[in-house]
Length: 326
Image (cartoon, rainbow, N blue to C red; front, side, top):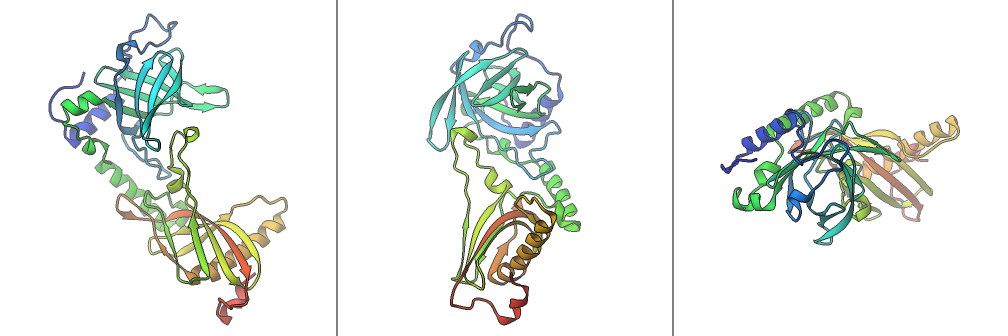
């Protein structure tokens, strides 16, 4: 049971690491492993996720993915949960399927209860593959506080608990240093790369993930895999290429890889050569790039671009660029 003392950021971190480091205790009562888990002791209690951490206490993985706390939920019964939708701004009921060893499924997610009280709970995410579930766990933990606890003890302020730790900053700096030496080690930026056109003939639109129940209202794909549609009007030929670009800390482009499937190696080589020429000419000449950042640290990250060229009467390029165009 949590104490009633005021909680500082350090206390939150220590509590989290203690919970993750201790032996897996199941506070929800069972009558042996043959019985299904019961949520009856916490029916109707609203919980808010205040942190999401890996086993080592970090909130980032090696790809730059930030494990942000997102869920607000309550157990309505042993076969139903109510989870808050930030898009619809209301709670939505989901079926709940109980399994053995504290495992359950709701909102198309497999989970395992590690600890649960009326004040807090820790739930581990499980990996699912087709019709199989890895009960060993993903070693990613969701830490919840009851809303009453947040209101009465924390005075409604959980900002310090939800903030990344100093260890997170040190870890991101280490990833940044590695990417500075090899741009292919770039990682996702929580503040993604921005593209800006220097010409009215070149237009840019960024693709966005629509939050729905199918993706659990998770839009992290937008910063993990930023995608841009770029149209070059008045180009010297019609073309369409999809490829990735690494954007370094000073906003320079480095060709990544084609984003299409090839049946023949010769086709891949040709496609790579021509799409790289599009980047070296049209994109480098007519775009300004603002590099991505994570925790205020500017670093190399990868984006995807889908570039369409449309022939027009106006010559958009200088003659010195013609030799490199497809």
